Amino acid sequence: MTTNNSGCSYCLGIESTADDFGAAVVSFDGKVLSNANDAYTPKKGGIHPREAARHHAEVAEKVLAEAFETAAVKPRDISLVAFAQGPGLGPCLRTGATAARALASYLDVPLVGVNHCVGHIEVGKLATGAKDPVTLYVSGGNTIISAFEAHRYRIFGETLDIAIGNCLDVFARAVGLQQKKGAPFGAIVEQLALKGEKLVSLPYTVKGMDLSFSGLLTAAVSAFQSNNGSIEDVCYSLQEVAFSMLTEVTERALAHTEKPEVLLTGGVAANKKLQSMLTVIAEEHDARFCVVPLKLAADNGAMIAWAGILAYKSGITTPLDKSYVDVKWRLEEVYAPWVEAQLC
Ligand code: AMP
Ligand code: MG
Image (cartoon, rainbow, N blue to C red; front, side):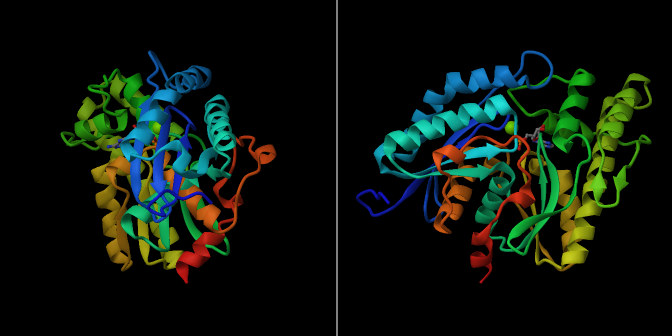
């Protein structure tokens, strides 16, 4: 393993599962030295995978240079390259994987393919000090309630259709909300919801431990279009119903597992209303509520670097001929021996 003059080892992490291209340098002892990012913003509608991939290829050099410069680390001081291997959009994943393979080969350092969902969980644990949480991971592409059990992060509940972040984004676009200064649509819905007063009737769909948001999305758009409530009231109601569903399933996972912490991670973790609802259930179950800091909430390279470091330290690397991307790589398929070591 290569180390720089100070004896420290560094990992370069590359994230490119969807709209974000991120690159970060993280030290092996868990310091995030840089976390550069450039997001693809579609001119109209949702993410177009090939257009997003083209964006990533165009910005990769700039984002990587920024990651090294901010960290004040030279490429030759890198000991490990980690990349998001899945799940995600194929063309986007392949762009990041290609950059990661090229860099690892050129620098002659090991490569580690990281599961994107594991990245969100591990960076949340790193930033909050959570050791063994029930995790609610909510983002534009995923909605998963999980906890660690017997070598793997087990999925206790998940969305059956669209992710909660996608539900908020599609709703916002459908009712004509405008993004100001690049604020995410979910944050715009959150601000409007603060002014809502009337609870509009919307479908609440929890099936066993799984959730469905597509009917809720359709009903919220149609409530607004048929003047059933003001935009503030519909945003308020959409959040109330969607976040109650998430809170219910998280609470049941907590009651079942009796874990000592609840961790909220992913881009939607920025939402204060969701944070407050989870705080209540955590208190009721004597668990500590932990939320990932805003700068590490949405997709980012630091979470990939940190999860890569944990895997590498427990002996896991990804040979080049096994570094193909897996668009449907599920969380519970990941063998995670480092977690048992953390729990000792
Ligand atoms: P990620 O997929 O992890 O990069 O997160 C992006 C998602 O987070 C998008 O769906 C955003 O709309 C959503 N998001 C960001 N900020 C907020 C917020 N304050 N409330 C709800 N959703 C948010
Ligand atoms: Mg994103």
